Length: 131
Length: 131
DNA sequence: CACATATTTCAGCTTACTTTGAAGCTACTG
DNA sequence: CAGTAGCTTCAAAGTAAGCTGAAATATGTG
Image 1 (cartoon, chains in turn green, cyan, purple, orange):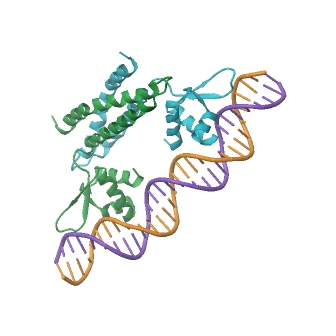
Image 2 (tube, chains in turn green, purple, brown, yellow):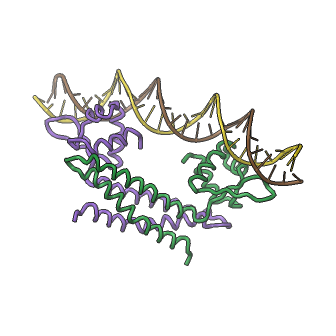
């Protein structure tokens, strides 16, 4: 993630109101319109920003989705599963000496793939369901 | 981590013998001596490669440490704690509307800081203590 | 302890990514 | 449905990171 994307996220965490137009982002961050457009789209694809509109204004506004941080941990599971698939592909090249150089990676990936869903469930319980 | 660092790791997972000299890495990966020197040092600092020597040869050899993959998950705890510290610094700028934009990040960081040590313990049990 | 071998350093090159700003396009308001 | 505010695109410039290879430095064998 680029510099501007990070600054957009930071600003969207503290701005008032929580939704900002591209022009507001441009002004407050000192970035160009093109940069805002590109980076906001990137963040939208990553699920870290959502776009909202209001009738009466033709501008789009950008804001952080609810529970954005705990939800972003969900994406980690995708990467863990990709890692497990990669590690499993390694079974084709297991060396004779110290084969655990390859097999251990698979075990680690399997471990996290098994543990992560439960962890996420507890995280969401804790963060999204306030006591 | 750069391209060459990744290729070094990959080669060290499957090479025979498991320890390789800089010259061997250079030959097998088609990289320059400078690149090998720099990237091997980077990997050493990250704890992903260790350097060994043998009397009778003046060359250094590089190899993967034991349990390198499960141990590399330990480093994640450091990053989680750094994230918690950053998130706690955010308490100085909590906005009035939708304050959870900032506070949720802190809760997520705290959650992982609390959970990670136990997770690591079970990982190491599972991977390093073969049944 | 001389000296050949191995390693590190570093300036310049290459490559990949980011930003800018203006032109073109979209779509909403009135 | 015309006009225009706002968004996207894109080529060019800027920036950052990695690689190379030769020169400088370090190492430890014999």
